[in-house]
Length: 217
View 1 (cartoon, helix red, strand yellow):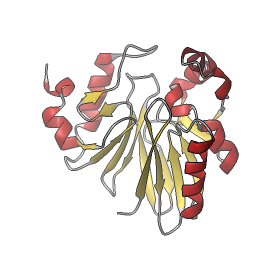
View 2 (cartoon, helix red, strand yellow):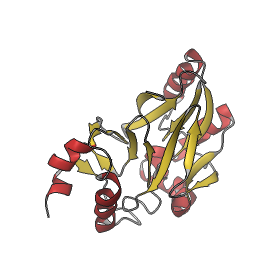
View 3 (cartoon, one colour):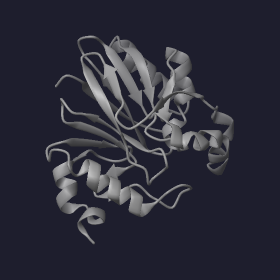
View 4 (tube, helix red, strand yellow):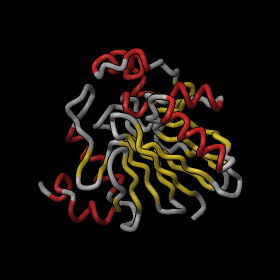
């Protein structure tokens, strides 16, 4: 394995936040920072310090509040720009409205997206890299990040163990999501490990054969 993965489960949303890092160069990316409150911020800060990591990327797989609530903390603490897909920018514009729905408006600050990601982009992390795939349907700008060398996929809320992302939110499309999963994710090697935005990890093989949203119809 070139890159290592550390998983944190944060906040009332049960969001999986991932730190993906090269143990030789110590460069890392923080994906979907869901920390909310000083204890969770300190957990992330402590891990980065203990491992002596250098944060060079802050990435949102999409801009729903559970994946973006910790953006401003990471961006300010480590002086890194936020990276996300352009099609989700309207969601960031409404981030305070999203926060108000959950009663946490006072704990959320808008973090400007400074680097736009698109299909086919490559994100370098030390000796490794993540390939950007645009898989809309959960949100217009949902992306997944594929580490081809290590056989790992960071799936955001596109694909879960035994399920897929909900599509009843603004900009969602069930048919678009299922089509994207089948065309882009189910064609990856069967032994690819999938790290979703919520819940346990899975594999492409397992989802291909047992995920009811993909095996029925």
